[in-house]
Length: 516
Figure 1 (spheres, rainbow, N blue to C red):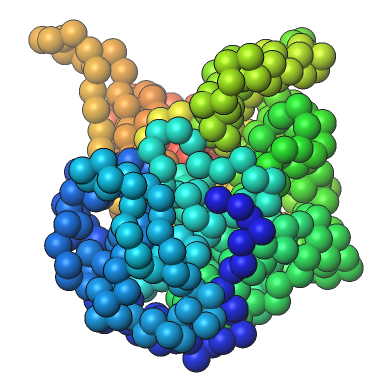
Figure 2: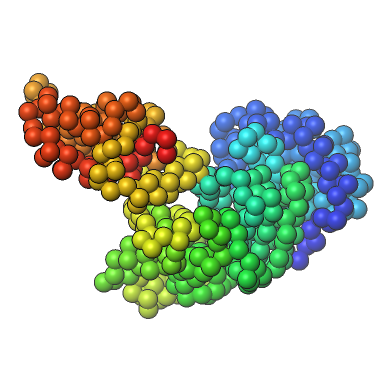
């Protein structure tokens, strides 16, 4: 694919509306695809493997036609396309062109003799409340086998990947007046934000990405966004927002070959910059949420590295989800660009350059995770940094919002206030007792969440007993007095040593203050 290829005209809103109507009429939706392809072929398509989907779309129905046209990027006979789409307007506005795909058919023949093909990838995407959305990106960047994105063009615009859906899932979705999507790409974050923000601004260094975002919003039936060309926050200088989201070009690489992934700054400087500068662009109480990479440098704790990024006046929650050694990391992104399919000597030279870069920076590994900031203005900001590689339950937006609400609560409640307050046990928390079979008492007790972050924490018998009776009826102090009476321990001693454990259970979301 050559990114100089023209994209559909976003100004033809009448044509876009007709296309959306036709797609929905043929059930070209996430649910419709699952029903047509079946779970295995649908999952394979998400892995960029197309053969199962090709086999499942051998029929001549409308949905099969659309899958071949927009997802598999195959040439389809015009007469067949005309049965499901308004062909002439789509040709005039640039959604379709005449020609062949040049790809081998099921029998090995080179494409279809004559037909129509799509100029962009149009991918059904299910919104959080059952909305039928469509993500528009460049051809070949969501399909093409296990060989990477299928393009090495600098300005290529990708569709929805795992990073995109991760960020969408962790974003706090409370109604806001203004939202900013930095590095919008194909527009997935702007599309989500449009559902709960009165005004959405989206920026990107790549004008082609802004074009795709405009198409994504229009084809999804979403309100228009304020689209601005430029790097990071440059197009919005002096402006502030209630929500900032970004899946930036965070890859730590030698150079800036691909706009969508390589920020052009050394090491993890781009991620540091976008996080540090967010504080001045947030309204009071506003959130900034990012995906990021950070270096693990010899002689330095990674936690202190990312802690130094947190801007003044902001609380932060930083979660490291994965760490790769430098060879794994280099291989991942070389494969992503399809470099493993080039000349072996060229591949080896690129690999070598990547390792040279890491060696010069004394980097031994790269961490990947989530960074959430909240503008609190507190003189004593709460900064939580943790490693959590375990499974979680998306969406986590409400879990993120609740985390910061708990930080506010704990910051304003000393031990005396904690003991005077009432608590309830969070939903779907279970207790596990661990010990030798037949032992009179367990070696330890574990409380485990089955929602959100799915945390597990070890507690003593007092902590387990306390959590078990928290139904909001009695204050924490009254419950401890009752436990002291049952165990024979001095009530004052128990009141002195237990608040730290209660504070931890509140911080991790096992206990919820009544009326918070």
